[in-house]
Length: 561
Image 1 (cartoon, rainbow, N blue to C red):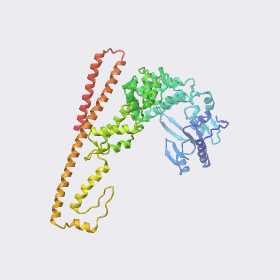
Image 2: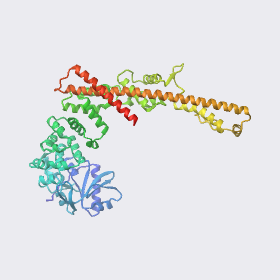
Image 3: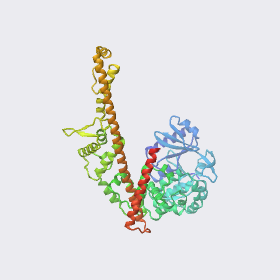
Protein backbone atom coordinates (compact mmCIF):
# COMPACT_ATOMS: atom_id res chain seq x y z
CA UNK A 1 0.00 0.00 0.00
CA UNK A 2 1.00 3.61 -0.42
CA UNK A 3 1.94 5.59 2.63
CA UNK A 4 3.68 8.82 3.43
CA UNK A 5 6.64 9.27 5.73
CA UNK A 6 7.73 12.50 7.39
CA UNK A 7 10.05 14.55 5.22
CA UNK A 8 13.75 13.79 5.33
CA UNK A 9 16.32 16.55 5.03
CA UNK A 10 19.27 16.03 2.75
CA UNK A 11 20.52 19.48 1.90
CA UNK A 12 23.06 19.67 -0.91
CA UNK A 13 23.27 21.36 -4.30
CA UNK A 14 22.86 18.15 -6.28
CA UNK A 15 19.60 17.25 -4.56
CA UNK A 16 18.32 20.82 -4.87
CA UNK A 17 18.91 20.77 -8.65
CA UNK A 18 17.12 17.42 -8.73
CA UNK A 19 14.11 18.93 -7.03
CA UNK A 20 14.06 21.59 -9.73
CA UNK A 21 13.92 18.82 -12.38
CA UNK A 22 10.97 17.24 -10.52
CA UNK A 23 9.13 20.55 -10.40
CA UNK A 24 9.68 21.18 -14.11
CA UNK A 25 8.20 17.76 -14.96
CA UNK A 26 5.28 18.31 -12.61
CA UNK A 27 4.61 21.79 -14.04
CA UNK A 28 4.29 20.12 -17.44
CA UNK A 29 1.57 17.78 -16.18
CA UNK A 30 3.61 14.68 -15.27
CA UNK A 31 4.35 12.80 -12.05
CA UNK A 32 8.01 12.68 -11.00
CA UNK A 33 9.87 11.23 -8.00
CA UNK A 34 13.34 10.45 -6.78
CA UNK A 35 13.89 6.68 -6.71
CA UNK A 36 16.52 4.12 -5.72
CA UNK A 37 19.92 5.04 -4.35
CA UNK A 38 19.22 8.73 -3.80
CA UNK A 39 16.28 7.93 -1.50
CA UNK A 40 18.25 5.26 0.34
CA UNK A 41 21.12 7.74 0.80
CA UNK A 42 18.70 10.39 2.10
CA UNK A 43 17.33 8.01 4.71
CA UNK A 44 20.84 7.00 5.77
CA UNK A 45 22.00 10.63 5.76
CA UNK A 46 24.81 10.17 3.24
CA UNK A 47 25.52 11.71 -0.16
CA UNK A 48 24.58 9.93 -3.38
CA UNK A 49 26.68 9.52 -6.52
CA UNK A 50 23.91 9.60 -9.14
CA UNK A 51 20.28 10.67 -8.88
CA UNK A 52 17.60 8.51 -10.51
CA UNK A 53 14.17 9.95 -11.26
CA UNK A 54 11.07 7.97 -12.17
CA UNK A 55 8.35 9.81 -14.04
CA UNK A 56 5.16 9.33 -16.03
CA UNK A 57 6.74 11.35 -18.85
CA UNK A 58 8.01 9.28 -21.76
CA UNK A 59 11.61 9.79 -22.98
CA UNK A 60 10.32 11.72 -26.02
CA UNK A 61 8.23 13.99 -23.82
CA UNK A 62 11.18 14.60 -21.49
CA UNK A 63 13.36 15.54 -24.49
CA UNK A 64 10.85 18.21 -25.49
CA UNK A 65 10.57 19.56 -21.95
CA UNK A 66 14.37 19.76 -21.56
CA UNK A 67 15.09 20.82 -25.13
CA UNK A 68 17.62 23.39 -23.91
CA UNK A 69 19.57 20.81 -21.87
CA UNK A 70 21.92 18.02 -22.90
CA UNK A 71 19.96 14.78 -23.25
CA UNK A 72 21.41 11.38 -24.26
CA UNK A 73 20.05 7.85 -24.66
CA UNK A 74 20.74 5.65 -21.63
CA UNK A 75 18.71 2.42 -21.56
CA UNK A 76 15.35 1.41 -23.06
CA UNK A 77 12.78 3.69 -21.43
CA UNK A 78 15.48 5.92 -19.89
CA UNK A 79 17.52 8.99 -20.81
CA UNK A 80 20.47 10.75 -19.23
CA UNK A 81 19.77 14.42 -18.58
CA UNK A 82 22.43 17.01 -17.77
CA UNK A 83 20.80 19.86 -15.88
CA UNK A 84 22.78 22.71 -14.30
CA UNK A 85 25.93 20.61 -14.92
CA UNK A 86 24.56 17.70 -12.86
CA UNK A 87 23.67 14.27 -14.33
CA UNK A 88 20.23 12.69 -13.81
CA UNK A 89 18.74 9.42 -15.06
CA UNK A 90 15.08 9.84 -16.06
CA UNK A 91 13.09 6.59 -16.43
CA UNK A 92 9.46 6.26 -17.43
CA UNK A 93 7.01 4.34 -15.23
CA UNK A 94 6.85 0.84 -16.71
CA UNK A 95 6.11 -2.80 -16.16
CA UNK A 96 8.49 -5.50 -17.42
CA UNK A 97 8.25 -9.17 -18.37
CA UNK A 98 11.37 -11.34 -18.29
CA UNK A 99 12.41 -14.63 -19.87
CA UNK A 100 15.34 -16.55 -18.41
CA UNK A 101 17.67 -13.81 -19.70
CA UNK A 102 18.31 -10.57 -17.85
CA UNK A 103 16.94 -8.40 -20.67
CA UNK A 104 13.15 -7.93 -20.49
CA UNK A 105 11.38 -9.68 -23.36
CA UNK A 106 8.82 -6.87 -23.31
CA UNK A 107 7.91 -3.82 -21.29
CA UNK A 108 5.23 -1.20 -21.51
CA UNK A 109 4.97 2.28 -20.13
CA UNK A 110 2.65 2.76 -17.19
CA UNK A 111 0.82 5.64 -15.60
CA UNK A 112 1.09 4.01 -12.18
CA UNK A 113 3.92 4.69 -9.75
CA UNK A 114 3.04 1.56 -7.75
CA UNK A 115 3.29 -0.62 -10.84
CA UNK A 116 6.73 0.82 -11.48
CA UNK A 117 7.83 0.16 -7.88
CA UNK A 118 6.71 -3.46 -8.12
CA UNK A 119 9.29 -4.28 -10.82
CA UNK A 120 12.29 -3.20 -8.74
CA UNK A 121 14.82 -5.52 -7.08
CA UNK A 122 14.92 -4.81 -3.32
CA UNK A 123 12.52 -3.08 -0.95
CA UNK A 124 15.09 -0.43 -0.06
CA UNK A 125 15.24 0.57 -3.74
CA UNK A 126 11.46 0.75 -4.17
CA UNK A 127 10.87 3.95 -2.20
CA UNK A 128 9.81 7.08 -4.10
CA UNK A 129 10.45 10.59 -2.74
CA UNK A 130 8.79 13.74 -4.03
CA UNK A 131 10.19 17.27 -4.23
CA UNK A 132 8.95 17.95 -0.69
CA UNK A 133 10.97 14.99 0.65
CA UNK A 134 7.87 12.91 1.39
CA UNK A 135 8.14 9.18 0.76
CA UNK A 136 5.92 6.67 -1.01
CA UNK A 137 6.90 3.29 0.47
CA UNK A 138 4.80 0.39 -0.82
CA UNK A 139 7.03 -2.47 0.44
CA UNK A 140 8.26 -1.30 3.86
CA UNK A 141 11.66 -0.44 2.44
CA UNK A 142 12.10 2.29 5.05
CA UNK A 143 11.87 -0.26 7.87
CA UNK A 144 14.32 -2.58 6.09
CA UNK A 145 16.82 0.25 5.66
CA UNK A 146 16.57 1.20 9.33
CA UNK A 147 16.96 -2.45 10.32
CA UNK A 148 19.85 -3.03 7.89
CA UNK A 149 18.04 -5.74 5.89
CA UNK A 150 18.35 -6.73 2.23
CA UNK A 151 14.95 -8.03 1.15
CA UNK A 152 13.91 -8.70 -2.46
CA UNK A 153 10.47 -7.58 -3.60
CA UNK A 154 8.32 -10.68 -3.94
CA UNK A 155 9.96 -14.11 -4.22
CA UNK A 156 13.80 -14.01 -4.14
CA UNK A 157 14.11 -16.77 -6.74
CA UNK A 158 11.93 -14.84 -9.16
CA UNK A 159 13.97 -11.67 -8.79
CA UNK A 160 17.34 -13.45 -9.22
CA UNK A 161 16.08 -15.45 -12.19
CA UNK A 162 14.85 -12.26 -13.88
CA UNK A 163 18.23 -10.58 -13.58
CA UNK A 164 21.20 -12.43 -12.03
CA UNK A 165 23.16 -9.21 -11.61
CA UNK A 166 20.94 -8.75 -8.54
CA UNK A 167 22.92 -11.53 -6.86
CA UNK A 168 26.09 -9.46 -7.06
CA UNK A 169 24.15 -6.32 -6.23
CA UNK A 170 22.90 -7.87 -2.98
CA UNK A 171 26.49 -8.76 -2.07
CA UNK A 172 27.53 -5.23 -2.95
CA UNK A 173 25.00 -3.79 -0.47
CA UNK A 174 26.49 -6.07 2.19
CA UNK A 175 29.90 -4.56 1.45
CA UNK A 176 28.84 -0.92 1.14
CA UNK A 177 26.11 -0.72 3.80
CA UNK A 178 26.92 -3.63 6.14
CA UNK A 179 23.36 -4.91 5.70
CA UNK A 180 22.27 -8.53 6.23
CA UNK A 181 20.41 -10.82 3.84
CA UNK A 182 16.97 -11.80 5.14
CA UNK A 183 16.10 -15.47 5.50
CA UNK A 184 15.65 -17.31 2.22
CA UNK A 185 17.79 -14.98 0.11
CA UNK A 186 21.07 -16.93 0.26
CA UNK A 187 19.44 -20.26 -0.77
CA UNK A 188 17.75 -18.47 -3.69
CA UNK A 189 21.09 -16.99 -4.73
CA UNK A 190 22.63 -20.48 -4.79
CA UNK A 191 19.85 -21.77 -7.03
CA UNK A 192 20.38 -19.16 -9.75
CA UNK A 193 24.03 -18.23 -9.25
CA UNK A 194 24.95 -20.21 -12.38
CA UNK A 195 23.16 -17.51 -14.40
CA UNK A 196 26.08 -15.18 -13.61
CA UNK A 197 27.90 -16.89 -16.49
CA UNK A 198 25.51 -15.08 -18.86
CA UNK A 199 26.48 -11.61 -17.67
CA UNK A 200 28.75 -9.31 -19.62
CA UNK A 201 32.18 -8.80 -18.08
CA UNK A 202 31.69 -5.03 -17.80
CA UNK A 203 28.64 -5.58 -15.57
CA UNK A 204 30.50 -8.08 -13.39
CA UNK A 205 33.45 -5.71 -13.01
CA UNK A 206 31.19 -2.78 -12.16
CA UNK A 207 29.68 -4.67 -9.21
CA UNK A 208 32.94 -6.33 -8.14
CA UNK A 209 34.70 -2.97 -7.93
CA UNK A 210 32.09 -1.75 -5.44
CA UNK A 211 32.16 -5.06 -3.54
CA UNK A 212 35.94 -5.09 -3.09
CA UNK A 213 36.23 -1.37 -2.34
CA UNK A 214 33.35 -1.38 0.16
CA UNK A 215 33.89 -0.80 3.87
CA UNK A 216 32.74 -4.33 4.70
CA UNK A 217 34.50 -6.14 1.88
CA UNK A 218 35.68 -8.96 4.16
CA UNK A 219 32.09 -10.06 4.85
CA UNK A 220 31.15 -9.59 1.18
CA UNK A 221 34.07 -11.65 -0.16
CA UNK A 222 33.11 -14.51 2.10
CA UNK A 223 29.55 -14.19 0.83
CA UNK A 224 30.87 -14.47 -2.73
CA UNK A 225 32.22 -17.86 -1.71
CA UNK A 226 29.31 -19.08 0.46
CA UNK A 227 26.81 -18.19 -2.30
CA UNK A 228 29.01 -19.98 -4.89
CA UNK A 229 29.05 -16.77 -6.95
CA UNK A 230 32.87 -16.92 -7.06
CA UNK A 231 32.67 -20.05 -9.23
CA UNK A 232 31.17 -18.01 -12.07
CA UNK A 233 33.66 -15.11 -12.05
CA UNK A 234 35.98 -15.70 -15.03
CA UNK A 235 39.63 -16.20 -13.93
CA UNK A 236 38.80 -15.02 -10.39
CA UNK A 237 37.72 -18.25 -8.72
CA UNK A 238 40.99 -19.31 -7.06
CA UNK A 239 41.98 -15.80 -6.06
CA UNK A 240 38.59 -15.08 -4.47
CA UNK A 241 38.83 -18.31 -2.46
CA UNK A 242 42.34 -17.35 -1.35
CA UNK A 243 41.18 -13.91 -0.21
CA UNK A 244 38.17 -15.34 1.63
CA UNK A 245 40.37 -17.75 3.60
CA UNK A 246 43.09 -15.24 4.42
CA UNK A 247 41.56 -11.80 4.11
CA UNK A 248 43.64 -8.67 3.79
CA UNK A 249 42.37 -5.27 2.70
CA UNK A 250 42.87 -4.87 -1.08
CA UNK A 251 41.50 -2.44 -3.59
CA UNK A 252 39.77 -3.68 -6.73
CA UNK A 253 42.87 -3.75 -8.95
CA UNK A 254 44.96 -5.45 -6.25
CA UNK A 255 42.21 -8.07 -6.02
CA UNK A 256 42.49 -8.70 -9.77
CA UNK A 257 46.29 -8.89 -9.47
CA UNK A 258 45.94 -11.46 -6.69
CA UNK A 259 43.63 -13.60 -8.82
CA UNK A 260 45.91 -13.45 -11.86
CA UNK A 261 49.00 -14.14 -9.74
CA UNK A 262 47.35 -17.24 -8.28
CA UNK A 263 46.57 -18.40 -11.83
CA UNK A 264 50.01 -17.28 -13.07
CA UNK A 265 48.14 -15.88 -16.05
CA UNK A 266 46.89 -12.37 -16.76
CA UNK A 267 43.43 -12.33 -18.34
CA UNK A 268 43.59 -9.49 -20.87
CA UNK A 269 39.79 -9.23 -20.97
CA UNK A 270 39.89 -7.37 -17.65
CA UNK A 271 42.33 -4.71 -18.84
CA UNK A 272 39.47 -2.60 -20.21
CA UNK A 273 38.20 -2.25 -16.64
CA UNK A 274 41.35 -1.02 -14.86
CA UNK A 275 42.39 2.62 -14.55
CA UNK A 276 45.96 2.37 -15.88
CA UNK A 277 46.69 -0.63 -18.10
CA UNK A 278 50.44 -0.02 -18.33
CA UNK A 279 50.82 0.35 -14.57
CA UNK A 280 48.63 -2.70 -13.98
CA UNK A 281 50.82 -4.85 -16.24
CA UNK A 282 54.02 -3.54 -14.66
CA UNK A 283 52.73 -4.36 -11.19
CA UNK A 284 51.70 -7.86 -12.29
CA UNK A 285 55.20 -8.40 -13.71
CA UNK A 286 56.73 -7.16 -10.45
CA UNK A 287 54.62 -9.61 -8.45
CA UNK A 288 55.92 -12.55 -10.47
CA UNK A 289 59.57 -11.51 -10.87
CA UNK A 290 60.15 -10.30 -7.30
CA UNK A 291 57.97 -12.50 -5.07
CA UNK A 292 59.95 -11.73 -1.91
CA UNK A 293 59.50 -8.01 -2.59
CA UNK A 294 63.06 -7.10 -1.76
CA UNK A 295 63.04 -3.92 -3.77
CA UNK A 296 66.35 -2.25 -4.56
CA UNK A 297 66.76 1.44 -5.31
CA UNK A 298 66.28 1.10 -9.07
CA UNK A 299 63.13 -1.00 -8.65
CA UNK A 300 61.56 1.50 -6.27
CA UNK A 301 62.33 4.33 -8.69
CA UNK A 302 61.23 2.48 -11.84
CA UNK A 303 57.96 1.03 -10.52
CA UNK A 304 57.02 3.72 -8.02
CA UNK A 305 55.72 3.43 -4.49
CA UNK A 306 52.14 2.40 -5.32
CA UNK A 307 53.16 -0.54 -7.54
CA UNK A 308 55.69 -1.78 -5.00
CA UNK A 309 53.16 -1.60 -2.16
CA UNK A 310 50.51 -3.40 -4.24
CA UNK A 311 52.94 -6.12 -5.29
CA UNK A 312 53.93 -6.62 -1.67
CA UNK A 313 50.29 -6.86 -0.52
CA UNK A 314 49.63 -9.60 -3.05
CA UNK A 315 52.80 -11.55 -2.34
CA UNK A 316 52.21 -11.36 1.41
CA UNK A 317 48.77 -12.89 0.86
CA UNK A 318 50.42 -15.61 -1.21
CA UNK A 319 52.91 -16.26 1.61
CA UNK A 320 55.90 -15.31 -0.52
CA UNK A 321 56.82 -11.96 1.00
CA UNK A 322 57.55 -11.03 4.60
CA UNK A 323 58.50 -7.44 3.82
CA UNK A 324 56.55 -4.83 5.77
CA UNK A 325 54.85 -1.85 4.16
CA UNK A 326 56.70 0.37 6.61
CA UNK A 327 60.09 -0.77 5.33
CA UNK A 328 59.09 -0.21 1.70
CA UNK A 329 57.89 3.31 2.48
CA UNK A 330 61.07 4.05 4.41
CA UNK A 331 63.24 2.86 1.51
CA UNK A 332 61.21 4.88 -0.98
CA UNK A 333 61.43 8.02 1.15
CA UNK A 334 65.21 7.60 1.21
CA UNK A 335 65.52 7.82 -2.60
CA UNK A 336 67.57 10.80 -3.75
CA UNK A 337 65.08 11.34 -6.58
CA UNK A 338 61.66 9.81 -7.09
CA UNK A 339 60.98 11.05 -10.63
CA UNK A 340 63.14 12.19 -13.53
CA UNK A 341 61.90 15.75 -12.99
CA UNK A 342 63.54 15.70 -9.54
CA UNK A 343 66.98 15.94 -11.19
CA UNK A 344 68.60 19.31 -10.55
CA UNK A 345 69.91 19.23 -14.14
CA UNK A 346 66.55 19.51 -15.90
CA UNK A 347 65.32 18.00 -19.14
CA UNK A 348 65.76 21.26 -21.05
CA UNK A 349 69.37 21.46 -19.82
CA UNK A 350 70.07 17.96 -21.11
CA UNK A 351 68.44 18.71 -24.46
CA UNK A 352 70.46 21.89 -24.84
CA UNK A 353 73.77 20.25 -24.09
CA UNK A 354 72.92 17.29 -26.34
CA UNK A 355 71.56 19.31 -29.26
CA UNK A 356 71.90 17.33 -32.46
CA UNK A 357 72.00 13.93 -30.75
CA UNK A 358 69.45 11.22 -31.46
CA UNK A 359 66.56 10.60 -29.08
CA UNK A 360 67.92 7.12 -28.39
CA UNK A 361 71.30 8.46 -27.29
CA UNK A 362 69.72 11.13 -25.10
CA UNK A 363 67.51 8.50 -23.42
CA UNK A 364 70.54 6.32 -22.68
CA UNK A 365 72.33 9.33 -21.22
CA UNK A 366 69.33 10.23 -19.04
CA UNK A 367 69.07 6.62 -17.82
CA UNK A 368 72.75 6.67 -16.88
CA UNK A 369 72.33 9.95 -15.02
CA UNK A 370 69.39 8.57 -13.05
CA UNK A 371 71.31 5.41 -12.20
CA UNK A 372 74.37 7.28 -11.00
CA UNK A 373 72.32 9.76 -8.94
CA UNK A 374 70.27 6.97 -7.34
CA UNK A 375 73.40 4.97 -6.51
CA UNK A 376 75.09 8.16 -5.25
CA UNK A 377 77.95 7.92 -7.74
CA UNK A 378 77.30 11.56 -8.58
CA UNK A 379 75.39 14.06 -6.43
CA UNK A 380 72.07 15.48 -7.61
CA UNK A 381 73.64 18.87 -8.28
CA UNK A 382 73.45 20.98 -11.42
CA UNK A 383 77.20 21.35 -12.03
CA UNK A 384 78.02 17.73 -11.16
CA UNK A 385 75.45 16.35 -13.63
CA UNK A 386 76.48 18.87 -16.30
CA UNK A 387 80.11 17.81 -15.90
CA UNK A 388 79.09 14.16 -16.25
CA UNK A 389 77.12 14.89 -19.43
CA UNK A 390 80.03 16.76 -21.01
CA UNK A 391 82.40 13.97 -20.06
CA UNK A 392 80.12 11.38 -21.71
CA UNK A 393 79.79 13.49 -24.86
CA UNK A 394 83.55 14.04 -25.01
CA UNK A 395 84.28 10.32 -24.59
CA UNK A 396 81.99 9.60 -27.51
CA UNK A 397 83.69 12.20 -29.68
CA UNK A 398 80.90 14.73 -29.67
CA UNK A 399 82.61 17.61 -27.80
CA UNK A 400 85.95 19.09 -26.89
CA UNK A 401 87.11 21.84 -24.54
CA UNK A 402 88.74 25.20 -25.29
CA UNK A 403 91.64 26.75 -23.40
CA UNK A 404 89.27 28.22 -20.81
CA UNK A 405 87.76 24.84 -20.03
CA UNK A 406 84.46 25.61 -21.74
CA UNK A 407 83.05 22.98 -24.06
CA UNK A 408 82.85 23.57 -27.79
CA UNK A 409 81.35 21.48 -30.55
CA UNK A 410 83.08 19.72 -33.42
CA UNK A 411 82.61 20.98 -36.94
CA UNK A 412 80.49 17.95 -37.84
CA UNK A 413 76.71 18.16 -37.78
CA UNK A 414 76.31 15.58 -35.01
CA UNK A 415 77.00 17.13 -31.63
CA UNK A 416 76.53 20.67 -32.98
CA UNK A 417 74.07 23.16 -31.57
CA UNK A 418 71.38 24.32 -33.97
CA UNK A 419 72.54 27.93 -33.95
CA UNK A 420 76.13 26.83 -34.75
CA UNK A 421 74.92 24.74 -37.64
CA UNK A 422 72.85 27.58 -39.05
CA UNK A 423 75.56 30.22 -38.84
CA UNK A 424 78.32 28.11 -40.40
CA UNK A 425 76.22 26.45 -43.07
CA UNK A 426 74.40 29.63 -44.11
CA UNK A 427 77.68 31.35 -44.95
CA UNK A 428 78.64 28.57 -47.33
CA UNK A 429 75.23 28.06 -48.87
CA UNK A 430 74.52 31.74 -49.33
CA UNK A 431 77.93 32.31 -50.86
CA UNK A 432 77.38 29.45 -53.27
CA UNK A 433 73.91 30.75 -54.16
CA UNK A 434 75.27 34.26 -54.72
CA UNK A 435 77.86 33.03 -57.16
CA UNK A 436 75.58 30.65 -59.03
CA UNK A 437 72.23 32.42 -59.12
CA UNK A 438 72.88 35.99 -58.19
CA UNK A 439 72.42 37.76 -54.82
CA UNK A 440 70.40 36.37 -51.92
CA UNK A 441 69.58 37.95 -48.60
CA UNK A 442 71.69 36.33 -45.88
CA UNK A 443 69.60 34.90 -43.03
CA UNK A 444 71.75 34.33 -39.95
CA UNK A 445 70.58 35.56 -36.54
CA UNK A 446 71.70 39.12 -37.34
CA UNK A 447 70.23 39.86 -40.78
CA UNK A 448 72.44 41.57 -43.36
CA UNK A 449 71.53 44.89 -44.93
CA UNK A 450 69.37 44.75 -48.08
CA UNK A 451 71.27 44.22 -51.33
CA UNK A 452 71.51 47.41 -53.39
CA UNK A 453 70.61 47.63 -57.07
CA UNK A 454 74.26 48.32 -57.96
CA UNK A 455 75.44 45.29 -56.05
CA UNK A 456 72.79 43.18 -57.74
CA UNK A 457 73.88 44.37 -61.20
CA UNK A 458 77.52 43.76 -60.38
CA UNK A 459 76.79 40.24 -59.15
CA UNK A 460 74.79 39.33 -62.24
CA UNK A 461 77.28 40.89 -64.68
CA UNK A 462 80.88 40.32 -63.44
CA UNK A 463 83.11 43.10 -64.90
CA UNK A 464 85.99 40.89 -66.08
CA UNK A 465 87.17 37.38 -66.93
CA UNK A 466 89.56 37.52 -63.97
CA UNK A 467 86.61 37.73 -61.59
CA UNK A 468 84.95 34.87 -63.51
CA UNK A 469 88.03 32.67 -62.98
CA UNK A 470 88.09 33.61 -59.31
CA UNK A 471 84.42 32.72 -59.06
CA UNK A 472 84.99 29.29 -60.60
CA UNK A 473 87.84 28.66 -58.18
CA UNK A 474 85.72 29.61 -55.17
CA UNK A 475 82.93 27.33 -56.38
CA UNK A 476 85.42 24.44 -56.55
CA UNK A 477 86.63 25.21 -53.01
CA UNK A 478 83.10 25.40 -51.65
CA UNK A 479 82.15 22.10 -53.27
CA UNK A 480 85.24 20.52 -51.73
CA UNK A 481 84.30 21.84 -48.28
CA UNK A 482 80.75 20.51 -48.68
CA UNK A 483 82.08 17.07 -49.61
CA UNK A 484 84.35 17.08 -46.55
CA UNK A 485 81.43 17.99 -44.32
CA UNK A 486 79.31 15.24 -45.85
CA UNK A 487 82.09 12.74 -45.13
CA UNK A 488 82.23 13.93 -41.52
CA UNK A 489 78.48 13.42 -41.21
CA UNK A 490 78.78 9.81 -42.41
CA UNK A 491 81.61 9.17 -39.94
CA UNK A 492 79.60 10.59 -37.05
CA UNK A 493 76.57 8.53 -38.08
CA UNK A 494 78.70 5.40 -37.99
CA UNK A 495 80.04 6.34 -34.54
CA UNK A 496 76.53 6.96 -33.25
CA UNK A 497 75.25 3.66 -34.66
CA UNK A 498 78.07 1.82 -32.90
CA UNK A 499 77.31 3.66 -29.66
CA UNK A 500 73.64 2.71 -29.88
CA UNK A 501 74.55 -0.94 -30.45
CA UNK A 502 76.77 -0.91 -27.36
CA UNK A 503 74.05 0.79 -25.31
CA UNK A 504 71.49 -1.77 -26.48
CA UNK A 505 73.73 -4.67 -25.52
CA UNK A 506 74.33 -3.15 -22.10
CA UNK A 507 70.59 -2.75 -21.55
CA UNK A 508 69.89 -6.28 -22.77
CA UNK A 509 72.45 -7.74 -20.36
CA UNK A 510 70.99 -5.79 -17.46
CA UNK A 511 67.43 -6.91 -18.30
CA UNK A 512 68.54 -10.53 -18.73
CA UNK A 513 70.34 -10.48 -15.37
CA UNK A 514 67.13 -9.23 -13.76
CA UNK A 515 65.02 -11.93 -15.44
CA UNK A 516 67.43 -14.68 -14.44
CA UNK A 517 67.50 -13.40 -10.87
CA UNK A 518 63.68 -13.47 -10.79
CA UNK A 519 63.66 -17.04 -12.07
CA UNK A 520 66.20 -18.16 -9.49
CA UNK A 521 64.17 -16.51 -6.72
CA UNK A 522 61.10 -18.43 -7.87
CA UNK A 523 63.04 -21.70 -7.78
CA UNK A 524 64.32 -20.89 -4.28
CA UNK A 525 60.71 -20.47 -3.13
CA UNK A 526 59.78 -23.96 -4.35
CA UNK A 527 60.06 -26.04 -1.18
CA UNK A 528 59.69 -29.26 -3.14
CA UNK A 529 62.74 -28.57 -5.34
CA UNK A 530 66.13 -29.40 -3.86
CA UNK A 531 68.86 -27.68 -5.88
CA UNK A 532 72.49 -27.26 -4.84
CA UNK A 533 74.38 -23.98 -5.21
CA UNK A 534 76.47 -25.46 -8.03
CA UNK A 535 73.33 -26.52 -9.88
CA UNK A 536 71.83 -23.06 -9.41
CA UNK A 537 74.95 -21.45 -10.86
CA UNK A 538 74.89 -23.76 -13.85
CA UNK A 539 71.17 -23.18 -14.40
CA UNK A 540 71.68 -19.44 -14.10
CA UNK A 541 74.44 -19.55 -16.72
CA UNK A 542 72.30 -21.58 -19.13
CA UNK A 543 69.25 -19.35 -18.65
CA UNK A 544 71.35 -16.27 -19.33
CA UNK A 545 72.67 -17.79 -22.55
CA UNK A 546 69.17 -18.83 -23.69
CA UNK A 547 67.75 -15.37 -23.04
CA UNK A 548 70.63 -13.59 -24.77
CA UNK A 549 70.50 -15.87 -27.81
CA UNK A 550 66.73 -15.47 -28.09
CA UNK A 551 66.78 -11.67 -27.79
CA UNK A 552 69.71 -11.20 -30.16
CA UNK A 553 68.22 -13.55 -32.75
CA UNK A 554 64.86 -11.81 -32.44
CA UNK A 555 66.56 -8.47 -32.95
CA UNK A 556 68.37 -9.75 -36.05
CA UNK A 557 65.10 -11.01 -37.56
CA UNK A 558 63.42 -7.65 -36.94
CA UNK A 559 66.34 -5.86 -38.62
CA UNK A 560 66.00 -8.08 -41.68
CA UNK A 561 62.27 -7.50 -41.87
